Length: 283
View 1 (cartoon, rainbow, N blue to C red):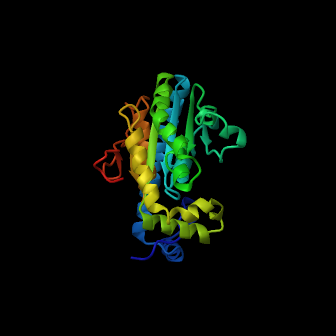
View 2: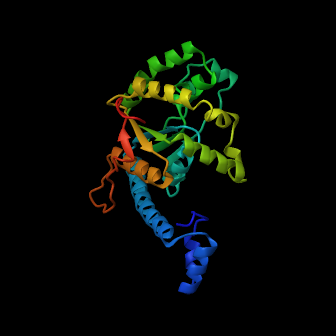
View 3: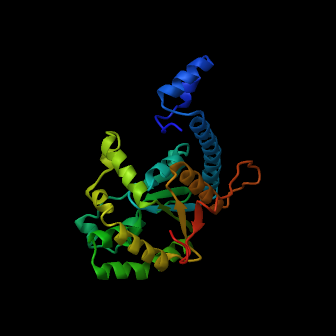
């Protein structure tokens, strides 16, 4: 099978006027018919799910609900790409994406959760956190950005903090995008060679492979210490970006009680790709 090449876009197909030109396009883009069909199937499923997201957002606005979705995972796990598919057709007035930089000196002197509280949704709004307060559970201790006392304090407080969010009426969804070490290395390599993605590389990214085992240790401690029945960790196998996006969207749709009685879209999750954390299962 040919190596996957450049994507063939819908705009490319609309310009075609013969089978001969289609064959030429396939060769030029270094594609196979199978890859094209898989891509079209993915786009069709994504379109249908995005229609459901629009319906979900309308329900949230009409009922003054507040939704928080956390996207966690290792560097290059696909969190940002998944968020972009979530918001692609949503009304900008009804959502915001939060990706906070490192805390300022003033914020360092505040209660750790304080700067995240400022970003919580108003009535009728969804907030997508591209990394969240769980920075302190994994990224910060792995890289020496917090003290042991700060880490332990966070782990003691986080479940109670999230319980308070629930009591205030917020629906909290915690997604963890899980990738293998060789897949992360492959994605880092692409970032280095792609001028449109080089901005994503950071000094932390460059150390991620060397610190892989330490990240794994703190990831497991995070799951064990903050997974609850009320606010479970949902783990998505994200080596395949497309499947990870589809499954994460379906999970969120199933977690928000909007009316799905008239939908013909398949919202069932694939247990081979998405599952709730369990200490006996490898994440």
